[in-house]
Image (cartoon, rainbow, N blue to C red):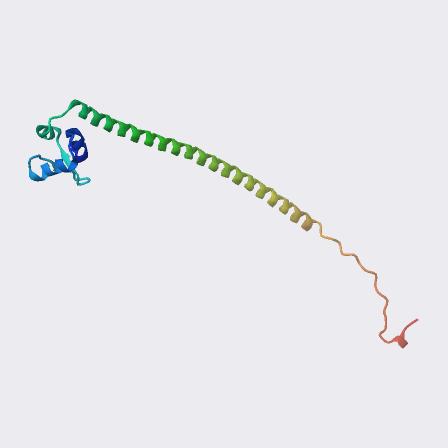
Length: 146
């Protein structure tokens, strides 16, 4: 697996600019990474110029493993957070379903009560009392009978 420029600098125990100068002068061959336009240096090519030290290589590997472990821990924490969020959202959905069912039951009960009230008042119309026939009154007081 090829080194990036910072990894090559650590493995060779040189500065990044030194490695870059060697690439630009043609003494060290390297290719461009199409993804991020960084330099990719093959370990055999790098160690042809700068012999590898075992402890430097072990440090680079340990550093890469630590970064990988840190990234895995971050992803695991994000996954757990999303799982907890999903549980909360499921609880909210259940609560809303219960509320909707209760509201629907109350609406039906109210509709039934209204229907019962309206049908009861229409089935028995109120009787209109008959008033006794009024005595005839004259508008002219001197023409009163009686």
